[in-house]
Image (cartoon, rainbow, N blue to C red; front, side, top):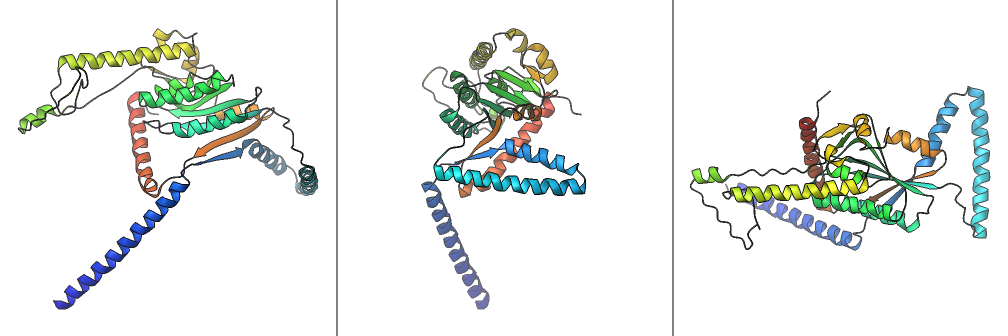
Length: 348
């Protein structure tokens, strides 16, 4: 018995030391990350990737002898280009731009639209150096979410429009509700044939546990200052007056949504399309919700010939705790997305 007691005490000491070391390590990591909270902007030269892919395909179709000759010529060309670049660098010369640029941004929105932080940084970066001949393509995917989050995201895209930088939004899968609020800011909307477009409406649902609590003889008190500080609640007894006020708020939000879409796309018959329904890409084209039918890949390949295509992505450095919780949050978002899709469209 004494041996077990001593062994238990020994394990407790070891556990205490391990926990103390873990706490110190977490504190050190957090302090280090506070000094460099700002994320980083990653630039990808998509034009070079397309060019390499094009060359790989061309070479693959040559016979063995032709491939050898091509590789030999390519090595010579690379050496000459490196030599010229080195000479220009010594002379302090900057290589002039020969093509206008296309900045490609990706926005895959969650329910709370927290990705708008990265979008803000990316657009700010574009605005610091974009010329009149440049343009922006946003590859957008979102079923919508909270009003204030997607309202801010649309406002970020509006910054490009205000500076008269041509903006194209490409939708391969879904741009519905708040997602379409963002898309309609663009000068041109390109949607894949079966992309989900529209859903110009507002929805809210609140479960109420008041009757259950009453059956368990549990009282809930809610005190407010202001007649409509709370209209519907989870636990309290909801009134018809509160329900009416809640519906009025939804209708007001819907009117603001419709007004915004009509302002961005005045050619739309807003009353016809603002019913909360969604349409597939080809149907959306007929209704004027989009301008072209096609995929983002087709769009970028077409631009590749005459433009320098550059991908921009802002990545926020995650704290240690966020790395553990982030994957769980992402899983919940994906689950909500699947539920939304199952309820809104037929399955194939």
